[in-house]
Amino acid sequence: MKLLVRNLSRTTTEQEIRILFSAHGSVTECNLVLDQETGKSKGFAFVEMPEEAEAKAALSALHETRVAKNKIRVKVAQ
Image (cartoon, rainbow, N blue to C red; front, top):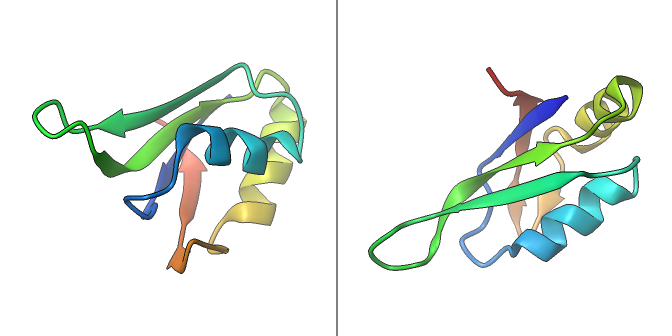
């Protein structure tokens, strides 16, 4: 299941996101979206978790939690 993580701090790294979601299950892919010109984070990422139950657990546990002072939003990617 692919999840969209929004409202990330511009300083949050791909590794930090992977660690955050790995606490709830296996993560096969984690892509932090970067601005092509500046190379800085655009504030959102995609996380791929193969087990639907683990992905749903991560979604409910992490949605609207604070990460680096920002309240992140997690939802199923369309």
